[in-house]
Length: 389
Image 1 (cartoon, rainbow, N blue to C red):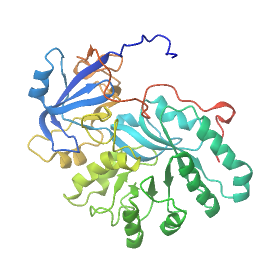
Image 2: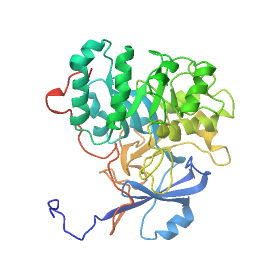
Image 3: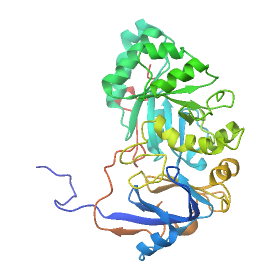
Image 4: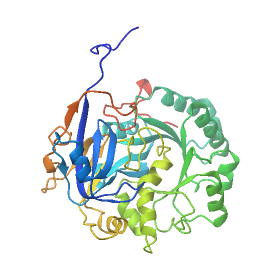
């Protein structure tokens, strides 16, 4: 049986293990841990719990001590990759639902080492052109795009026939679907089979109660980007996420939606676990949006003091603009050193691994293949650099 060059049969890769501590660890999927810590093994979370217990269990490691709060990496559920003005990791974002209009843009998340889904967009508005050329071009891109993570389809055509065919294509290739109901009614999207757990929608305006009820029935997550669009969606019944569209701070967007204390936890969950659910990455090995064993080691550190206060409220109202470190897949993607430059606080070393990490024998906690795995992502062959459809 052939093996990869450079690997010896019967051996396993050595694991990198590190411990990160903070006054508050907010797993989102569980209660806050005061004076807490997380253990990172390769690209996965190995343990979350009280600092004293975790440090005692790893006496050979030097913990990385962070100020404020450790929480899951934020998820931007609607980000146009060709319009993002700054690296989104500065806001604590570790994954996104990225919309790519061409194959150059499709490489953005992979090149940044971030996770999520890259949605290949089609805006083809003529069914004849769709049948003649645009459909084949999109299929070629789906099959050949050199991208390390998950690929989906952004069905943004105004033509109903094209929309129906895009829905069929998403099922044929087993890809997630991204739609915007401003181009079609929610009822139409349901008629062509677009709605469901395999799809999330991004809205720019309010939905009526009938639409909200239909989306709840289909299990479709709604990505909100403005207070105007949030009307009727903060009652805890609808599945929501947060999208910035142009790559701003999703936590700031979430803060702008809060009009009552009861919204704070809901909105923090929307920008973490809700975003993961929108991308279909909230379950299984390498899951996003929470800090728990087996999940992908995506986390962010915010310099906020939540001791003795509700951590959800503190994070939502004091956290925007105060991210000091962002880790995706266990590796630092952004860190602040006090001068505003990429730095290495808390003993983190220069190559992106946390200080105090030790290498031990044994394999990792799960298989790789997440969208944030390191590596270049480029367009494929003769379709690179061209609009998809």
